[in-house]
Image (tube, rainbow, N blue to C red):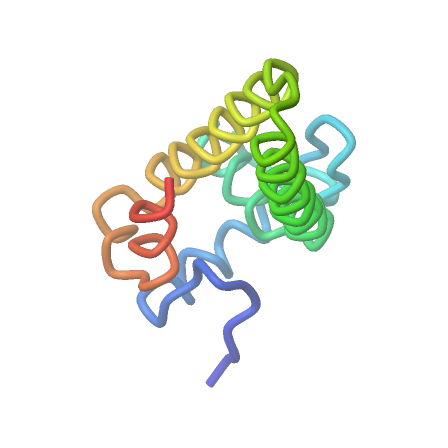
Length: 125
């Protein structure tokens, strides 16, 4: 058997992932490889992005930055500082998290609910 490569992958996705790897395309700065013969859909492109190590690194950086922002916001709150810039950042983080969830639902459709990580993300967002 094949081992899971990312947190959103479930056992049901193994065949889909193997097929998607042959349809990889270069998207933005995520170099997911060259496209294969045939057409590549939005769903296949998003799957390649979600599977990329670079995407995982970017999302990890977003989570760390969001955590730092929460801590900074609490410091401002205790000291009576202006939190308007932090509020804007929090809305930006929310948009990023919602876009990530939408990408997962476009790729996995209803199977997304089978992933404990996706359910956890839904609760957090």
